[in-house]
Every structure is written in C-alpha cells, then in structure tokens.
Image (tube, rainbow, N blue to C red; front, top):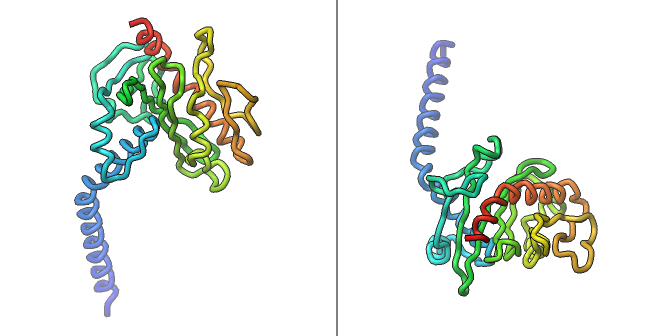
Length: 230
C-alpha cells in the first residue's frame, strides 16, 4: 500500500465524515431550536410558579402569557419579538441601546410581569427570570440556572429551596426607593423583605445573583414607573 493511497483514503474519509456531520447538524437544528424554545417557556412559567412538562409547556405558555413586549431604558415600547431577544447580546450594549423583554401573565385574576436576567457566577454565566406581582414591587417567584457552577455549592441557585426564598420579597421599599433583593452570607436578617439566605460555600455565586438582580432589574425602573402611573 503506497503512501499516496493512504493519503487519498484518509482524505476521502475526512470529507465523508464532515459531510455526514454537517448534514446531521442541519437536520437536527430545527429540533434543537424547538427544544430551546420549549425550555425557555418552562423557565418563564416557573418564575410565576407554574410547573410545566415539556409536553405541556407550549399550551400553558399560550394560556397564561397574554402579552409579550420589548421596552427600552425609558420604558417605551419598541418593535420586536421579546422571545427572540438574546440577553447575552443585549448586556454587551450600552443601556440606552438595549432591548428589554417583558412577559405579562394573567393568573388567578392578577396581572404578573416576568423579566429575564443574566449575570456572572464563579465559573461562568448565570441567568434566570423573576416574576413580579401587579404592584411591580413584590416578587411572585424566581427561576435561576447556570452554566458551570460547582455542584453542591453555587449550583444550588437552580434548586427549589434557594429559589422559593424570593417569593414575597420586594424590590422597592415602602417609600418607593429601588432596593432589590440581595443574597446574604449565612442567614438573612429576620423580617428583611430585601434579603434571602446565601449558599454555604457559594459566596461568589451568591454575589453574582445579587448583582444580576440589581443590574437586571434596574434597567426596567422607567418601565415600572410608567406602568404604576398609567
């Protein structure tokens, strides 16, 4: 067997494998995109405490999410599809140029507002959704996830016991000042409407959630003000 034959055979195999992989990626892309869309619906619903399996996510999303919109930093509605906005890209822009998605739900006779968040943990990005009650000050629920936080430590932000602490907390104080929830080291002070217990051994991730809540919600302040006075 000559070297030339080996080279041609190897080259042919590389080309064939590349074509097969490219074809598979093309065929699977619609399924992957749908799976991502379904997962996003599940996470949005989870922020207002509606559990949804993959099979029922789309039905429940269409039932409870009555309006989706994009607003700018002035609280003005702008054109576009909120579901298609990538917060990772928006956060790289100046605040004045960002598109800010808003999902509005009707649940048990109350209007709820779901807002997406994205920040940084210890090892990579963290993200989530916060649901606000109709007063736009009280948290109805929260859902968080991460890319690579440490199991048993920072990764616990995606666990129910951590997320359930946020229900009933407030992002504005009684005087109307913006005061988002912070994740404190150890236990939160008794009766503090703006603090939740931190994760033992996960201080940097906990701080990342605090920063994500502050930075992610602050850009909506003008929208909150417009809605409260409308």
